[in-house]
Amino acid sequence: MFYQGLKDEVKDEIIKVDQPEDFLQYAELAIKIDNQLFERQKE
Image (cartoon, rainbow, N blue to C red):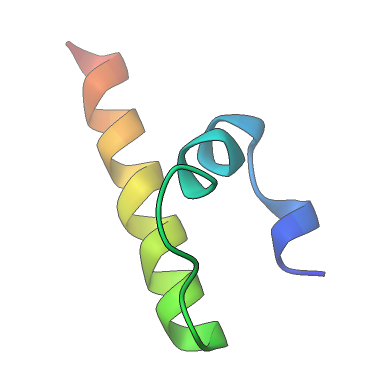
C-alpha cells in the first residue's frame, strides 16, 4: 500500500537497491530518495 503512493521517480530508484526488511527502513529510504531528487531538481 505504501509503495503505491510513492512518486514514480522514487519507485524507479527504490528498485535499484536492496529492498529494506521492514516498513520503517522502507519509509526512510523513500524519504531519502525523494529528498535527493528534490535537491537535484533545484539545481
